[in-house]
Image (tube, rainbow, N blue to C red):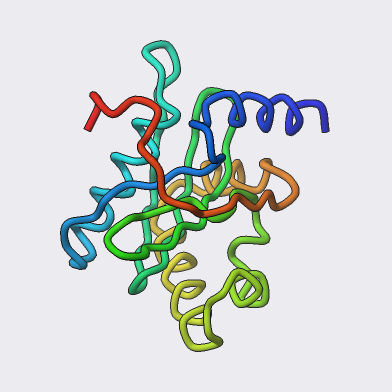
Length: 156
């Protein structure tokens, strides 16, 4: 629990005023969306001494799930795209793979089914030890999901 609280405090310290993260996505193509999501997360959280590893990044329309590792920390992030901007809506562990959680976060049953299935397929192709680390984030933490400028815009 202390690790989760420390992580949340660290994340909150990185937030610009307004308390959310977003990145402009110039195109709706999944590859472009994955690149925009990667830029957003890297520019917000990566530090010279603490590299952020993002894999997998799964995009389903205007929603995405990302598995991430940074040092001893790991988890998943759920993002939404609105008006060309990607924003982090929630961070968590295994709960973000659940269709019911994705529906509670605003996806339709069909969207949640597709995103959950796509994430399961993507995670099946990577190291099971890495996937197991995603569960260590703990409880689901929801953000406002509002647009803003990343903390390190020069990293785009």
